[in-house]
Image (cartoon, rainbow, N blue to C red; front, side, top):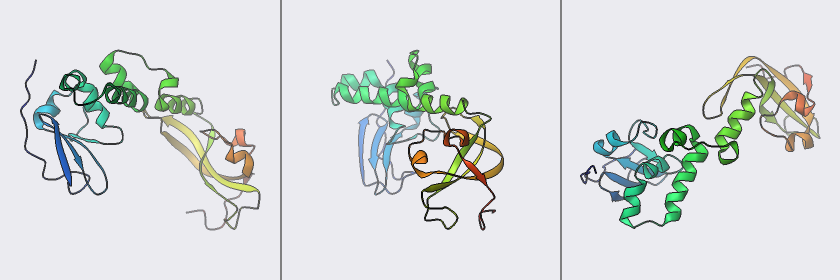
Length: 207
């Protein structure tokens, strides 16, 4: 079993000035700042992170990326006895949901679309490649949008990355859709699914 050394308290973080810091395992610091926080790894810990879970920079933010560190050191943390099993399960679930490819590469376990928001989003946008989909919308507060309508602009979905974010191509197209239909939309919202009525580019929107 590899032995890790305790490391000095971090003096700074990518999230701002450090207010509190706790070394939860040798070389793994949990820090908080006025705005955010996360886990900061020593050079030794960062080098030992599995390729599939390692994030460049050794700073693993508190919303999602922290779970990579906990999953990678799950057995060590369990032996520590400081955290409940539910905490370890939360880490596994977080990686599985938001970074399913990394989860499968590390654990060898497959991830279904029902277990991962990212996989659901990625599949939805992959199915919409080549379609004209909404990229922005305006309510009737905009002077070019009639009452009861929603103004939308869209482009053609060209590709989708591993996190389920689309890249678009072609010229922007504008349209009006029924506000209630838009409110009940599913993502991605294609012009066809909304029954969109194409209009000319509104004044001042051609930038």
